[in-house]
Length: 426
Image (tube, rainbow, N blue to C red; front, side):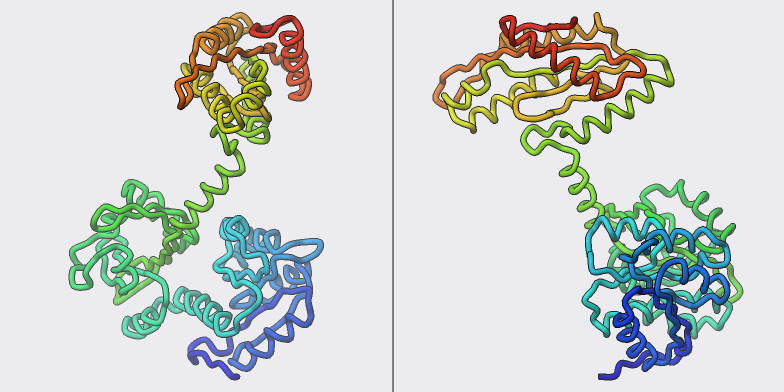
């Protein structure tokens, strides 16, 4: 099968960077058949050396490569003035949200997943080359620009730089912003920014560099619906006017997935507290802040007394409810700066920045008393009462995280050994 592209981008130079020769040959066969000028690099260092001598119009870059992966190669390209504007399209067999986010952060223009579907490859390659050609030939006649823009499969608008008046918007942009095509002239670009005050700084960046790429900008539709976009803009001349050519892609779903993944990675599934890894990371941040400001930090280890008996007597569902009840009781009155995490089982840790040992002991005693006084009522009306044992210590400057955790764990064990329902602080 033979796929063709519009003649306006035939002859474009494409550098294929892949350590697999078979992949190179497959791409070369299709791309060369469609009029592209193809060159190859077997790894990242070779690609950087080739681009330094002769810049291609587009780079197809494998992510997984030995010695230097595609993310590093792209970062270095974007760091150099003479190569930063070359569009980079990643090719990867690992089509994950995290990988895509990392790729866009280092400056990738697009992603193509493996196994390769050649019509998709050609479409994405064509789209990137079209965008690049628009930037290079922005002073061409207005009608020619409009014909090329009409072929783009992404939302765009053209707005006047001076007053932000929208001069043109394609159907996809109208749909995304809930605007009727006939009403375009009634709007300014600033009507669709969630935070219009950001435009001056964004415009300054565009005017200084001639373009902005892959900026995350919050948009708002005509009806007030907010969504996050991946925003790019280039300065152009159109019919003698200074204008911005703006493209955007709705990445709200991707952002929601990022947040969900981040929450799953940092949150205990049962209690909603910081999990062990996230608690350690938070502790590291607070330790460094305390070192800078010479402020104290105290740590408290909290463990439910005879928790196994609750599980064995009432079942694990009630045990889970007991853990949630503990979290509610401990969390009451904590400051925003305090960190509360579940380290495992019925064992919890509380970090108290800018708190002396005396102050931490007062708080811990309030928590202990609150839990002792609490009555947890089951569905059948039966009442469960809990107590906790606590180990408390000051996290002194120069003390490693593992050392303070070991210290308060030993004091917790001492509280258990000497009768439970008590706090050991020394």
